[in-house]
Length: 623
Ligand code: AGP
Image (cartoon, rainbow, N blue to C red; front, side):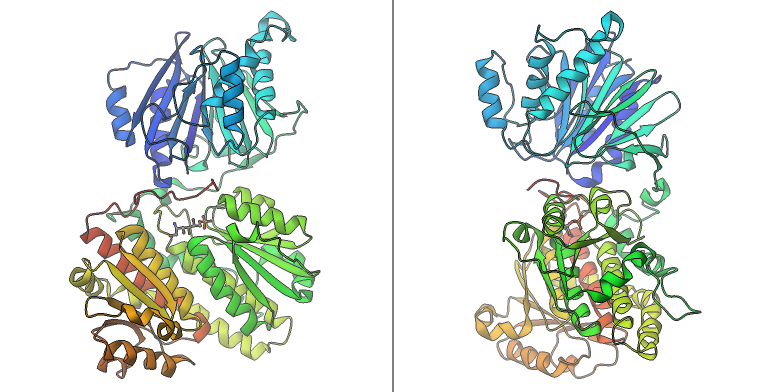
């Protein structure tokens, strides 16, 4: 996901913009740039590569200006080159914009702008926005509606509004002009923009992480809204020029949780802090006194949840794997029909949403465009939509009817780890919450709550095997094809283990239901192929052991995740990672841990950047 930072205040913009971009690095990018209005001139500095490369380019530039915009780009239209890096200028070189999102009608607009005499330097869709604003700004028919003193401010504001109304697609943008050196304009549709209200200064960004060092007072722009910031204050309006009553909110984001705390990587920190983050996720939600699950975020919808005839779930990637565990949980604990969809498939499938359907969207970032679109599709079809989200105040969190935050803290590593176990914990609590209001006895509920409370300490036990897992990764990190197999609740865990290995070690890995082996994939088994069986003691253990024997008979390498004390599997497996015993429905929160560590160690041994893997972004806000 691209990152935007913009500043208007009484300090030099350059260092604030660069520091803000560094706060957004974790989201993944391939080029960066900034533009500062300096002594009435627009100074543009951009670089392919890392922010450190941009800093090298900036070293010789003494930029004094206190108004500027900056951007980290994750390439969608056009390669990761300096020319395609943001900010983009209009053809006069006086207006600069940075843009997150995708302009779907950019080709048509570009052709029309060229016919109007505009020139283009990049392959991007974003550059169209700069020239469109320019065309409206320099359109002589635009009267100076507010007279000479504010004429240019209103002129720029009007030009931005008119340009945005021409766009199809999504945008989060910030705009400055050397002709209007005391005005910063930002706007959004489908891509987040947060306006930080400092003391005599404003920091506008696509993520609160870039703001919170300066201020925790902020306005979250809504879709089709824009903010006009001047040195005297700010105004929020719609792109139709209707006033918007801005709501000032407190940013819930602590910078200290953004620090590495001595770990080599954010991914390592986030794997090893899971005992704490899971405890944080459960905190206050398993009431000792009443013996109930307490979920404040959905309490007002208790009746609708109990009356629900069906649960729909939509998510992407790791969140989708959590949703698949959720499907099993709702059906087995709450006897509720449930179905999980890839958000990208759901939104185009013409889905049937019956009455009394509760729809759940799961998203760590709360900004994944496909998941946001699935949310909107479900709402339009009449479903009650709940969100299971980590990022407080994110777009998805704001658009659902209600929701449950993970409370696991900011997840910086691109590969999702602590958010996954948090999602599983929330789904389990939600299924128990509904089950108790349907047929589950209080005694059974307390049985699950007791087991759930033990999970954080049990995760600690699993983490103690990290060094052994490192040794196994060392032995097999050069194998280029892996299989991950599991049954029941462990099938989604097998999928998640395969995804972790793929996305940070770049090894090809496939997750499958263990029983599917005999329907084809068993042809792949050779003495070269590591096969990971997620096989804790469960109702399907004997069946899984049958699959283990099939692989063993064909000389496959067997790495097993098994329950402590299971001696049987040791007769077949080359390596065994153990997890403490717990209820079958809760096992995924434990069995995923060794697979997170396996992927982390393999990626490091293979020399990859585990926090910022190639081609990946932390939040995918494009289709
Ligand atoms: C998981 O490790 C990946 N980074 C990716 O699959 C991610 O889970 C997916 O893009 C969904 O992101 P979200 O939870 O922020 O919506």
